[in-house]
Length: 533
Image (cartoon, rainbow, N blue to C red; front, side, top):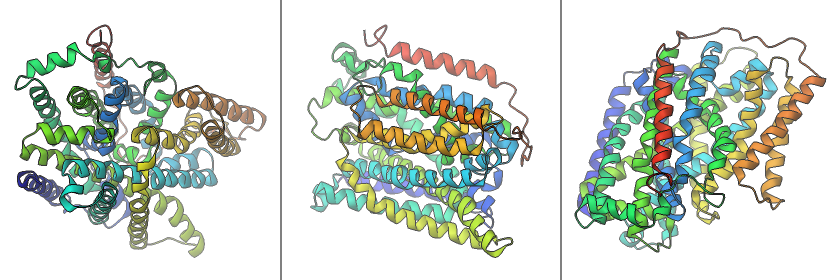
């Protein structure tokens, strides 16, 4: 193991942690609002960085570069086209949450439907985080580090054993970070690591192209443009990882859910000191997402030419980094990868704990004691819950190695089972006034059963994103039919209970138009019209 890599990794990791804890040490953590929402004091810069880096984990580095290596650039659809969903969320969803003064996504469901719907969705959320999000983040980080530091050879252990070891280390570090530092430490860390990531977004393609071109960046670039150009195509066919047609069906639904209803993402936005700050932060995160192909996908293109026949395609990104970067930059990349794994893991832990404490544990205690519950008792329960789910994630994560059709495909398919049913009932709650709670409960169960049947019992020749769209439409029709037959006696009216200023950002429409133009340009560049032609 290269000593320079190890020393630079330890140095950059220590500095990021030091800055995070110094900056967050003055923040109070005496109440649930302090611990879970940084006391609603975050400005637009921290919100943007937190949204971006909570979204970017080792999963993207590993999974998307693997997909580019196996297929082509069509996988950028997950990130680049998410800008459309993020702008819709900024304009319509966030104002509703902040006007209603909700602390969790299911809080809105209680206001819109009833308490039992809130309880049911909170349980589904927790299953999603505990079974899908947390283990996947740990696994992605372990794969990256095992390859980058060549852990099996260095310690004389098998690849399977190295995954177990690294999952355990990342899980323990992440758990301590979240429990001790709280939400403020997580958001500060995200800001620091986002700066490092943008540096790497320029550094890694530069060194990769220079290595490919035998010392010449221009020659490396020419190699990518002159051979195997099918990998440059972002307009995916029906046999690719992300067919282009899915961008207008299931992809849009998944992105709307993720950016507008996923608790650990929404928690970043509603922790803002004003609606204006939240909307500006989302715009900043949009711009960062448009730059993502430089770091998250270009390395996969370079790897296509460097490694014609990799057996373990999940190692595309860490292998490239290890081969083309100087030692101290490998250390920086490893530090950012660790930060990406830990901050997404922390955000998931924090949000899981938020859902458990505020939506399940607190109502239970209030009903049992018939009175108010102390903040100290709630915080203690939240920290114990984080410890428990951390242990489960650590023991479950290594088994993702047995997933078929690649790690990233596993991540998306399993996530849909929990997420899109929630999107369906919240979305219809937004756009209707008399839809009853029974429709929400039936719709939630109906979607889960139908999607499971489509994946396990039927041999459909459709991409799973198209299946999502079809089941979403059928479920929506069923819910609207129930609403027509058994309408809610009184129409729902949004009651203002805002905790911060809810004046919108005046320049948001101009910035939104600019971001959409950039998105279209990216697709034109990575298409048969230009680079893939």
